[in-house]
Image 1 (tube, rainbow, N blue to C red):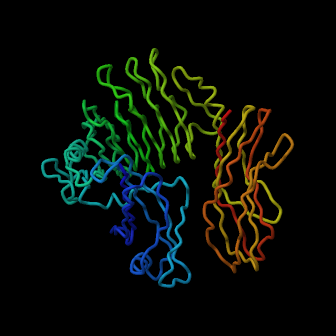
Image 2 (cartoon, one colour; image 1 turned 135 degrees about the horizontal axis):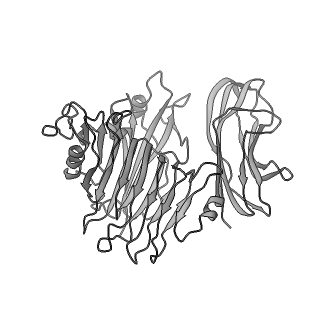
Image 3 (tube, rainbow, N blue to C red; image 1 turned 135 degrees about the vertical axis):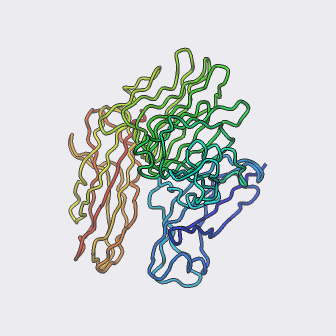
Length: 469
């Protein structure tokens, strides 16, 4: 049977309203990844770009399900930047670029879907609160979330929103039953729990249910308990203390429960992902820009098969030179030694003499390492009479300095006193073999000819090293 894919693009036109610009349905025999070019019609261009605006952020929601009537297998969000061309003939599409290959939308489009939003405020009333009517807020998070879980979704891809402004009193625990494939955006406004404490959310296991939910998080909450549930957690500038997806009991278990966390998310406590007796521990995947502090990932009890942990993209399992403990049945020293990263938000000027861009990643052990990274490059009042070549590359800066792998090279193009971003540039992924401990790898950058005026700058870069053998 063929697959069905829908992609709906929305743009934040005036800071409040959300307009659906385009919608496509793939051919019924679609079976693989979708790839294409986005083109906006002339009237959409006029709506998207007022006279004084040259650039807009847009969000592309992609939903995939086996057939048109089925629940989605996955629902993802992709953030893009659409730039207005300097000269725009009627038949010329805008340039669409991704500012960060791991960028995830902050779900602002969902936050303004008032028909699916339940507001919680100190002025609210649980007896009169209603979803879709911000003028009728709930008093408690418990009542608002219970209403969201009881609501009927008109479309399996609907995103329900819990927007918490202020709490009247402390709610030690908010407990709701799971709902198949329900997606909830927790929009927790700054300071909402300053005098009461933040949200502790428990999603209870329902026998016979699908055990699959998605939570989008903006703001700070305490613990998230979703025992036995396959949970997708997408950070939109979110902070969570701890996460629990372990099986509820030997009688109630789900061998397919898992945690997939990505986006802009901080996990400040531990992750528990135990299997029931004889059931494998759960699979935990950390991606995007997840920052997991120095705590434990517990995935297997004694006598149960192990689950797995994967760390990908620019996720961090610990600060540089920190540690991660994994309990039990896993050698945590391997993990501590196997992932290293470095990030810089400083500004470095590129000249005709290549130079080191700040710090470095130190590889603590011999082996085969996978190196990846990206840098944000910009023109700062720069003038180039002809196009020059920008070069960015990894370089070993100790133990006999040497270039590592191939460089990323790209043109500056002709510029006259221009200040603009050249985007987030991904360096070629490199395999680096070393027989030593302590090799230090940094970013080197330069330009074939310096600008005659102004500067060419790197305004931030990051690097990830992962030992593969």
